[in-house]
Image 1 (cartoon, rainbow, N blue to C red):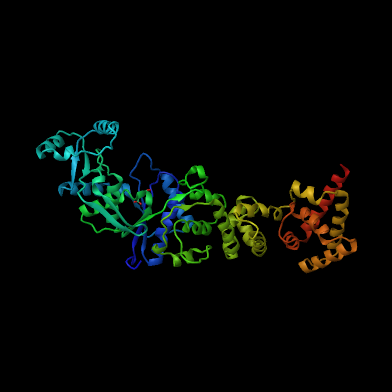
Image 2 (image 1 turned 180 degrees about the horizontal axis):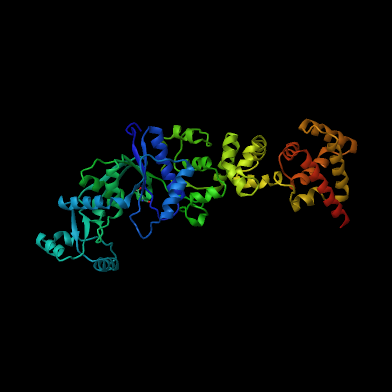
Length: 487
Ligand code: GLU
């Protein structure tokens, strides 16, 4: 990594869809390396495909990056705005004799391709337009005959030392004289990318390894344009748990989907960081953004495809939920509570101590924010929904349970000091007096208070509900049990 002093890195998404997991991983690795090395992280929106690029996608990319906490340096570059430079670079290559005009029509090319394939071969452009006399080229240009610009691929081989794959080389004979400018004067991807990366002084191109076959063409363009070469790092693909390339079939692939499913940004970042990178040795998988920045190095980039396992992402989320400082959890989840209609963010912050107590109790029991929010329902509002399975199990014999709960209520009513020590002593004494185990009182009580068979410790539940609401809920349960016994 010693040659990577303050690299200039970029993330260059095409705004033709949402920010997907693979793109976010590429952005993250570039960002981590920039922050680790004191380098620069640039963002370029590759919007040259006007038919497929949308403002919504561009916005989704910005939002996704912001949500993950990946801030970019310098102004965003919109590739489409650089058209004049792309055309000037193509003109320079023509002037230097490194490219030529090709007048073959798309129909002619398609025909020759079909013929080559019918004969069992692969099509390669036969350079017929490269052999046109200069006067003929001039005549056709003057006559307004449409043409594309092709790069003349030199003999030899093109190789680079990839930071992930080590040496990669391609024999140039396998590479066609590729088009760099379409007949409408717009650049092809490889030209636009190289032109922009040169202008943005990018020194390390880190991207998915689906771009490996573009890299030799890009290297040739750098050389022909007389620009210094950047380093290249091609990141392994991301697969689903079935070993196939990650796609919609595997479920959500857009980063925004995970945000809405209740994944915390620090957990998503942590999870993405481990897709294709490892700090090496025996390492703690659960890391904060700061720890990731500190640990990140291109030495830890892996070659093998990585596996996107949603179960692991959920686990990771649970870990972050449990470990983050409580005020950070509050900031991350309060909007979800507001959306669920429990209370506004302001109301929650006005009862901060209570809310933190609630979060402390619930965060160790949930992996997803949605689960945590669902589990919080009994602590807001007056009534509680009784879960049928909990009722079937803990209120099996309503006629026997009702007087026990009445005794619990009367015992608690006798106490004004509402604290766990009092509650525990009072419940133990009551159980002894009734000659039953404490569970016989507390399990039905739990259903009365939160409606479910599982919850935080029952005394914490009572503290969170408060004295009055606890007593009202027990009374409501008694009424319900009386109805059940009568039915
Ligand atoms: N815009 C290209 C893409 O979305 C990436 C270009 C690059 O990183 O060189 O795949």
